[in-house]
Image (tube, rainbow, N blue to C red; front, side, top):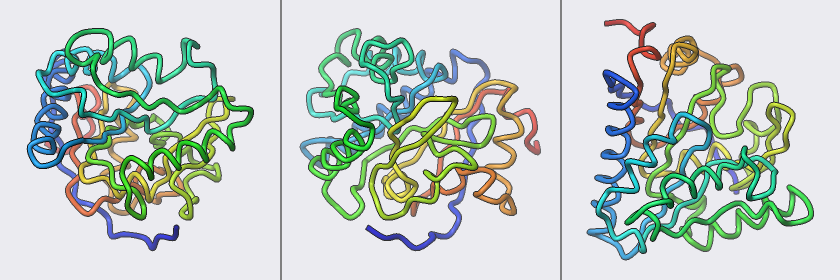
Length: 245
């Protein structure tokens, strides 16, 4: 797989009044997107973000009345830890989206961190992604991404090799001392809908950089996510405090 740089996307920022409002808006946005996809096709494929920010959103999402049995849930990235480790993104999704009806009927496809090496895990996840979505690169229906205070998204950290990988669907990342498996920038960019979920005053500078057309992707790898359509940014007031009114 090879990819030439796509033009920068257009961004639309929606600011929520509170953390609870942000969680509800996120769940409703994802639910509406899935509803549209499932009205047209038998199955939908989405990739969700890990970390602490989306937990509440996933709890709300679990209550959305959708045919969850027709939804394949993947992860944008995963730490190379056992499935029951507290830092596992898959565990977090199981404890939120899949902990209650009707979201518990979704089909979660976790990164196989029980394989001998992260390299094998990345290869297996790439094969799974291609099997589920097809395409070159595979096109997910929706990707929900976080934004780190250093400008990373998924496990595409500045100063590491992962953001530069364009010939694979999935690659290895390194962040905060842990090896990780992550979707690559071309795979994230191939998604039909991309949403960034940004919360907290610590993200003010990162969000400003993401929206700055002159910002270098080398410093802010989140800018490498360049889908053909509009990128929706759901932010709370604390994160959006540095934006022009």
